[in-house]
Length: 70
View 1 (tube, rainbow, N blue to C red):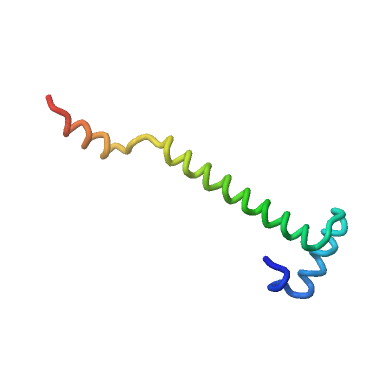
View 2 (view 1 turned 180 degrees about the vertical axis):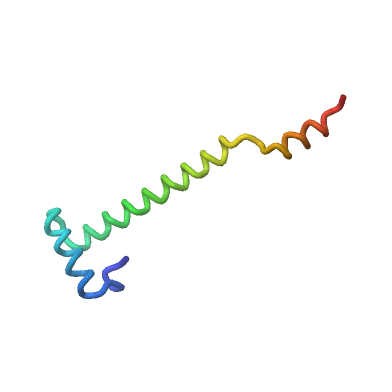
C-alpha cells in the first residue's frame, strides 16, 4: 500500500506505528513493503523446494517402468 492509496484513517494508524518505532511514515512504509516482499519470496522458495522434493506419482513411475527395456 502506498501513501497515496491509503485512507486518512489508515495513514493515521500507520503514522502512529511509525512514531512508536521511531521512524518516519515513508521509512515505515518502505520497511513494511520490504518485509512483505521478503515473506513472499520465502514462500515462493519454499513452494519451489517442496515441488522439487516431491516423488513421482504412481502413474508416472509405472510409465517409466513400462518404457524401460526388458
